[in-house]
Length: 354
Image 1 (cartoon, rainbow, N blue to C red):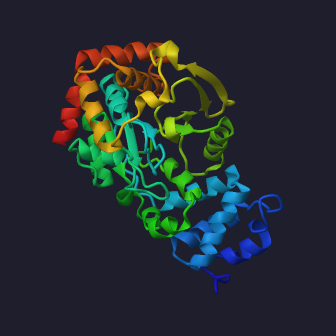
Image 2: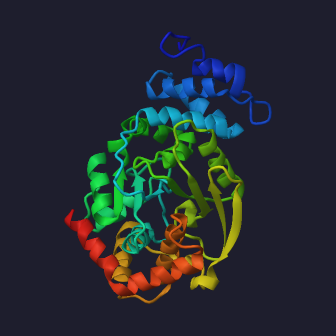
Image 3: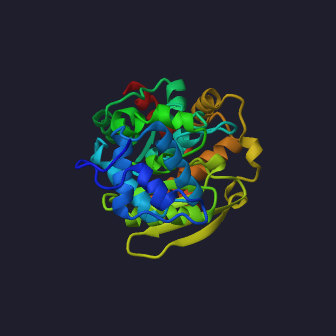
């Protein structure tokens, strides 16, 4: 039975369930930073009984984690992350590790356009992460013939050489990757799905993330504020298609936070930026293979359809997040000019050669 130890402290997960978080979503109490930190250290150390661990994860889901709890989890996770910082300062795109299942994944194409425009980008993901286990960045890159199982140092080198870098979770966050089987048995998302997107293995100063609803974006921004290890100066969050880091067609909410300032939010009316179509128009049959083919065709200038428009707007958002332009409209002009130049296709060739 889990009990207080000199290594972990006085709050085994079973006691936290009984005394703090386990009484239901209306009556449960929130944990202190110390309690949340100890709980996650125990989880990463393989200490909890599987039944207790599942109950704890579910209780956290029911009651909803506070930014202080999430910040504590992020700080504990940071202890086990192998940071490899490139010489440049890229925009960090964590996205959702459990992927997309219906629409094209455009982050590789838009990231390469942003890189060719002078805004370096890094992305990170795992491989079929629970619970959805759908296609993520790794799988599109694999289809494109790009190495993905890189050491963190290689990922940093890729970022500096190409302006676009991929960090692979089993390499830079092995403690999180080791939770795969336990997470897989849950059947529902846990707080690990939230915090892994905030890992920031390149130590970037800008985070680009996505959300379904604005209150979630504010919780993530407040999590960065509550974390003692997250060295993030700017956060841009937006309503992503399938919760991923591709802009949803229509009216899209964007939340922006600069350290020391209040959260600002505004709407992007995507038809005003060329995306005058519906989400279903970005649908594909095979997310990884079709997204790779679309990436090649858009970057080569062989398409002039909704996918090209969507890539351009998403590249504009990355350029805007880095503050390399003053607004989305200027970023879109830069993105379109960059696509027409053919430079993004050259960056794709450089990725393949890396």
